[in-house]
Length: 106
Length: 271
Image (cartoon, rainbow over all chains, first blue to last red; front, side, top):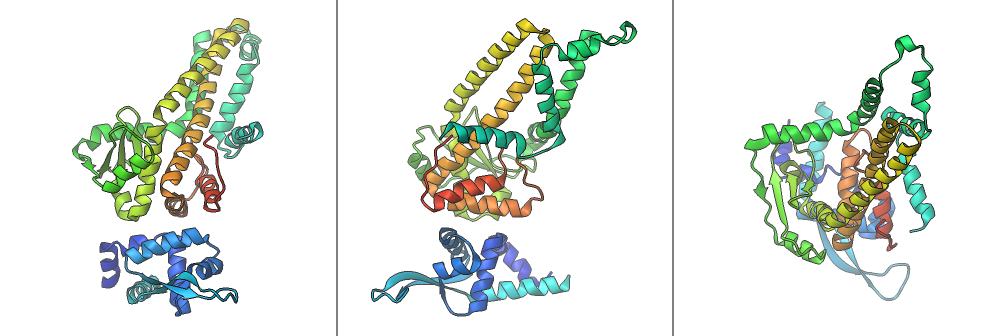
């Protein structure tokens, strides 16, 4: 087992990613590179927006996701809407790379 | 909730899963409900191989026991093993201000005590109905995020809250079953009435237990939001090979579907 994988198990990062939806969300954020807001993730992954928010909270707690609120104009409206923009952190990148490596070893 | 929905739930309980033991139990109930079925079968045999009533009774109890064995062997074995071998694993108090807040929010006036245990025989969270103490395995505390653990505690506290109501319902069901089997006993041999009573009690208790679980889910969702519980159920479902439900718990798929309705603001009743 790679050393990084062991570290992630010890600091409970691995546990947070055991949920299939959280893993999917993290992979999606990693692939898109650009920060995404909750509704975008929900539509892309077919998960309810409230569940996406819940999973993002958990991922943020473990330091795998960063989020901040921004004003965004949605559907051509003049008024901005406050949305939670999220992106995967470097730690998430390391964790996912490590998982991929572990799977290749198998 | 309409009568039709309640009927659907009962039908769902009977037909949703098709393990052999449940079909056998169902067949036994139907047969025992027809007065004299077993009596005539055994007494049409030649007198040389006639079986004594005691043997018939014992064999029928064995059939019912076999039917229910699969369901209860896990919980009984775990309970006994937990008591005998698990004494060295002392539970530790799970002290969290969030738990006290949650209990207050759910309107529980009793003193709430939540413990974590590393006892390997305790596979999932459970509530001791007599002491109203909640136990959670340490593996769960490590595996699930704090929000989801709190939602799980909310579910267990739901059992604490509905405990007395559940007890009254149980007493009502026992009274109903005893009365109906007594009436049957007047028309047929008492042995059949006894088996009918036993089987009926088992079926009704399971239905009641499923409803009690749904109520606890709903109470937790009302206090904490349904997200935490849904996430826990989804993860458990992804980890388990089968999701047929058990004699005490409905299938996870159904519980997720029911809680998901709350995400869209739909109102659910607690029955």
